[in-house]
Amino acid sequence: MKIYTTEGIRHICTKVLERDDITMLDLMERAAESITYELMARWRISQRFVIFAGPGDNGGDALAVARHLVQQGYRPEVYLFNIKSSQMSDCCAANRDRLLELEGGLEFEEVTGTFDPPEIGPGDVVIDGLFGTGLTHPLKGGYTSLVQYINNSKAFIVSIDMPSGLFGEWNVGTDSRNIICADLTLTYQFNRLAFFFAENARYLGEIKVLDMDLNLEGVGNTPTDFYLIERDDVRQMLKVSDKFCNKYDNGAVLLVAGSYGMMGAAVLAARGAMRSGAGIVTVHSPMCGYDILQTSVPEVIVEPDIDRLITKSIPMNHQYSVVALGPGMGTSPETVDAIDQFIKTFRRPCLLDADALNCIAKRQQLIRLIPHGSVLTPHASEFDRLFGQHTTEEERLKKAIVVSKLNEITIVLKGHYTMTVRPDGKVYINSSGNAGMATAGSGDVLTGVIASLIAQGNAPDWSVVMGVYLHGVAGDIVAHEHGQWGVMASDIADNIGRAINTVMSGK
Figure 1 (spheres, rainbow, N blue to C red):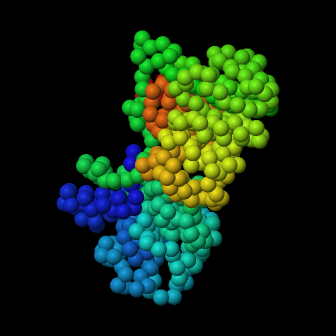
Figure 2 (cartoon, helix red, strand yellow; figure 1 turned 90 degrees about the vertical axis):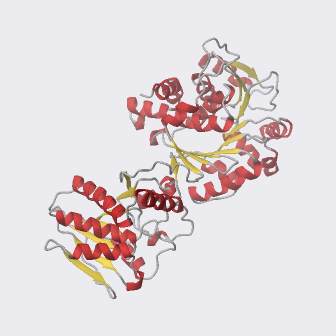
């Protein structure tokens, strides 16, 4: 599913209006009806609604909602902010006039100067229709005081389209004090990119995308660089093995993983690779991991390092379909040397995770030597060690887009909505998974899954997208059985096969 920018959504709406010969007012009526139905489903007719409407089209939406509520027997209190009459949009003015034509059931005030706000508090519902995605600059003046007043009221806040003050895409530098903190955001037809950044969750609350019954035929060619990956996308991409295949056809994975006290990471990565269909998995680890791996994952080949406790060398004894490095390796000087030598001599795409990235961070010059087409799978701290300190997910995504293109590598930004950034600037946002997967070893399993999919002949960048999604589905299966609190990384690994079946069967 495409995630359109604000400009892209505006373009789509213009095309729909032209093609279907409808007006913006007609579109606003559909939006208002959808919002009103949602409000009616949640609150009784006795509920107190206080509606704050701005002078633009978002305010027009709020005024249309007020009219529909009155017609359904509710008695909303409406405040329209029209400090400068020349700023009011035509649609907002039209909905104001329609609202004022109603008889009874309405408390309405058009604010043109000093404003004495109503008392609002717990038990009240505030409808925020001040500014939506049409906002072009941060809020200022009296609007900032109003936003802070609403946020401090402890009322339940419903934002129309977007919380006022929050932009649809990028919000770096926006003053958090001047953004509505909604409990519920009711948006139209499309997800916004801002919905997928953790730092925006406190402004958005629950998000519900309302269907406005638009005829979207032909708008799919509207350009965007952002995509939400769902089950049908993965089902179409996933390569199905031929029934006459053998283990060599399903690819050979080399995992370089583990160290003394961290052999569990190697075990989990190996299980992830085996459970997702790799034909042969070889694990290179310190000698201390030999018995552990042979006992825990007897299906894999174990090639011990020359050292008992750490990895000191990464020999290429065979031809492998893919090499994945990092889980549990540690960052001892000898291991850093081994990674250094590997990066400088191995010229095929590889998968770098966890401590492989931490080792590279200790020798920054290695970043530009990473083979083109390789995949990096950092969590936030690992990313910052490599590319500098960042404070938000939005900042990391912007940086990843630049670094991915510059170095011709795919970067996986792990999080609640894991984002895969390709060198062509395309960003694929994952929709599966749950909070219970934020547990030790989960990333190690993901490394094994992605490596396995690459080994089976899938393109590295698409293998990442598919692997992240399947990993999330496996986590959802575990959470369904054990609850989010009971999710363990080993459970995720053991349910990768079920996840693939679930996706391929469409159930």
